[in-house]
Image (cartoon, rainbow, N blue to C red; front, side, top):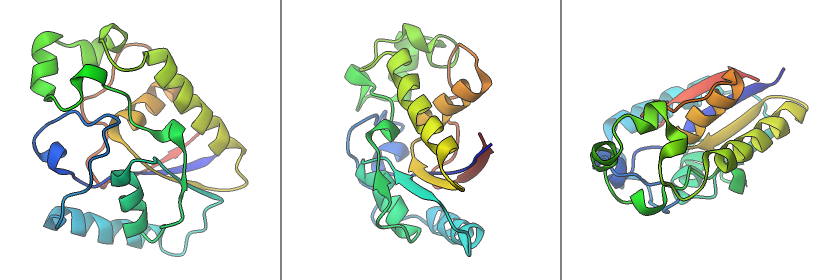
Length: 177
């Protein structure tokens, strides 16, 4: 069993607009909002004094910026932590995707025309999970909401879809793998 700490990146302008970011490299809001600053303070307190065997980040700037804000500017970029590739949907809104494919995100993710297959996305997640399980101690990861939802699919060994928001921007979740 491995201790897996996950922090979703802070809010970006596209989050505020309900846009699908996927693998587009969208930077954090500047300046950060009051809610994000409060979340940062709470996360720093939760992480204070903890030692991590491995600290990873998605290579996208919104995740690496979030890592740096938490005091981990040297977090190791891992391409397997990239958000799901939304393909033609990147830059469009959740509402547009839902109108074109009602319920598919939550119930039939494999049916959506995305920029990568669900199998490829879950394979990336599985590699990170396996890497974390082999680490000699707790692992801290900075990443993306759909990625975390995909990890939960892998851990629960279930099919279907993902929640629209697995974790609020800037929120921390601790899992046991």
